[in-house]
Image (cartoon, rainbow, N blue to C red; front, side):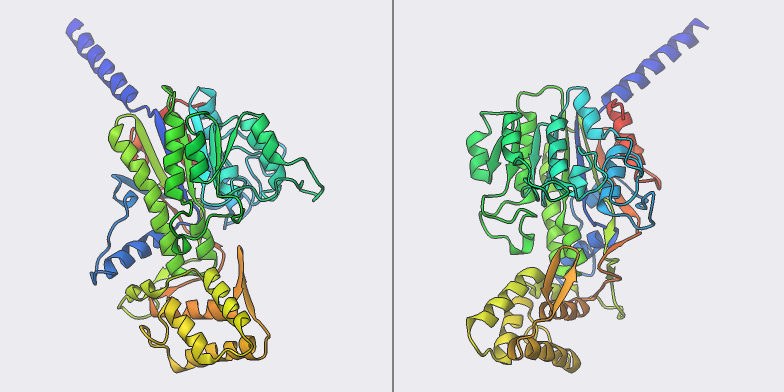
Length: 469
């Protein structure tokens, strides 16, 4: 009997030690906004197609040892928005569309996993490629009845006491939800002890002087988001740089670990616009940020947990639109986003009184490969020419509106032709009810198996890390 008890004792100690070893000290929560499984698959097929390979070239996170899928519906709708989707991922509870960090009646505030991490002394970072007060990042620190209460979301940021924020900027830093004037948020951030850094140069100058930073894009840039990855030039702030800055800040003077949320926000924007190539480049941009996190994991494999997931899928994208042959290689002919193409068409139209159809064709060729690298069918060419005549000859510009952009109809139709030639189809310009992917690696990652609710993801992270969610 004594021998049996002794064996049991050592077995119990072994199990406890095993579980203790799995407790993550560094938690990375990577969210591809709008990233369904087909956004991932299209990117991997596209990469292989550049080498004429009928296979996939996997992204870094799709090779993680644990992978599953989760629901995305909200409490109020079969198709969630980013506020309800982000809230589910942040607090482990479903709410109705439009609400941030609260119940559907907007009367009860929920604690987020980021707040739970802060409670036990971990440092916390919230980063994104869009504005810091946008729905998904805000889900981790704000409690608002409406995702559009941008000023009030900024005030909630002050209450959070988190250590690092990064994104493009803030959408309404001096206007309340009722549009009344309000004291600017920026001096309030500084008074609360945050150092504001506009661009990487300013970040480099202040990073060793402070432990609390709000990193934003350079002054004079758009407040709503970083540039699309396909449009970025050298010197433009990108998500991988933000991720590196976050890791650097959160590890400094810190022996208690950290929680970092990183959002690839413009996967969603590109998918809303049904712009396949821009979506691919946003996926690659997000993948670069995951690479930075994976590099950290390789240095601390026993203490790090990485979760890569999404709040919802956008666009209902399909790979294959009739033929068994995939021609995704053709998508590489696109050089700019749909929005940038719209700007270039507008610049051409404003450059002189008369612009010929040949000049417009040359512009479409240079930016999309249409009419040169890619043959355009007669009926498609006629439709583009009709739009040219309305815009450039009759000066009656037609536009196409998606959730985050209003673009030239000529640009959107040209992109649509390229999508079709590149074997891509879209179900809508909005979110879908598709399952969201979940990838995991590191301490405790083995619990991320089997179909789950999106609300299970933060609960599992909290359980692994010993957080009170």
